[in-house]
Image 1 (cartoon, rainbow, N blue to C red):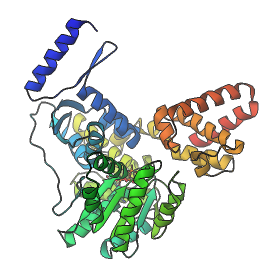
Image 2: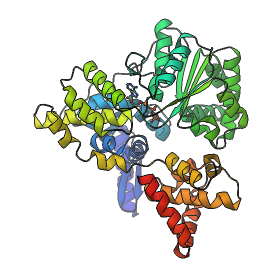
Image 3: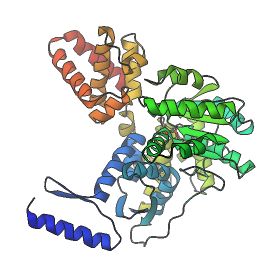
Length: 468
Ligand SMILES: Nc1ncnc2c1ncn2[C@@H]1O[C@H](COP(=O)(O)OP(=O)(O)OP(=O)(O)O)[C@@H](O)[C@H]1O
């Protein structure tokens, strides 16, 4: 980079900072990336893993970051419905991702195109000690009970009414099926009964960050004080503790302290405790002490009931025939179902038409295509494991025997082929392996398959099964 250019950048940076807009500028092969650009790119990548394609295309892609200051991120959205959707479904994840990227909490502010920013509306819950405030919408009243979630719902209600009785409550299941909703419902219930209840909701990544920060700042005593004096500890996505040995030890001690005091612990995960790779046996066994409960995808009737409850709540005028149509199109997960409903509303609003099944079919015309091809790493691992008669834990573990190494490499290869995961992300999903291990696995399978017709057939069969 020439001297003059560096000087100009420095001046520009100084100018922006003096104007109280701290902006980090990076020069990447001819493109100037501000802190905001690179932050937004990282956030979009995280959302890509979290939501389905439809939600991403319709709600995340149209959002534009406008400015970033010490504690405020301004985002422009095209319609009020987009703002509602972000408020209801994406804000907490956004805050979590920003905190992870910047290492500081930032409050998002949504601005509609052509509208000036209003002050942020933090949703803090009185009495909660959480870093992440509970979402007041996630309560038992708004949770629709159906076949796939009735046991989990009953167990969650029981944990809320009789804390410590069934401990821990471990809720597991696929993406967007209501695990966080149920978990936070327990917290909201407890705070309704007693507004001074000490409730803490964090993701396992945040627990890890808090722990690491406390070591760095020499405040582990404070950390322990905070996590071990609670009435209710809610930890979301516990599977991400997988390869974090030190954090697992700390969590083990936190768990024991709360458990001994009969304080309720609620954990969610995308899989059963024993299927979480590299989770210490003593944690696996503790997670099984209470009652692991699964949430499975909702059947058609439950999906229709969920849509009805959403439109009633938001006072939206949509006929049952349209709701039935939407519910028939989306059988992936409830987050996608909500996304589809909002998409139909936005479409009707923009085209100034009333909502009918025909309009819904136009609005959702790309939906089937985009959801059908969304395959998860979990599905790939399970499918490959059962194909080769080994377990998912073998696929994610470290055993070097031949019967396991090859299927593991095939699973990594298929993940690269069938998802948009990066090499480091694949490594993480396979029990915290390095990206070079993943690259080696992919190269190995590609090279072997060239001359091995049986391997080619196996890969084809697996792909067909996964895409069916
Ligand atoms: N049974 C239900 N009734 C009403 N709303 C539901 C139900 N199940 C899920 N939802 C809604 O679907 C959306 C996704 O749910 P939630 O975030 O709890 O899923 P999750 O299982 O935690 O997903 P992830 O694994 O991606 O974190 C939320 O807006 C939630 O309110």
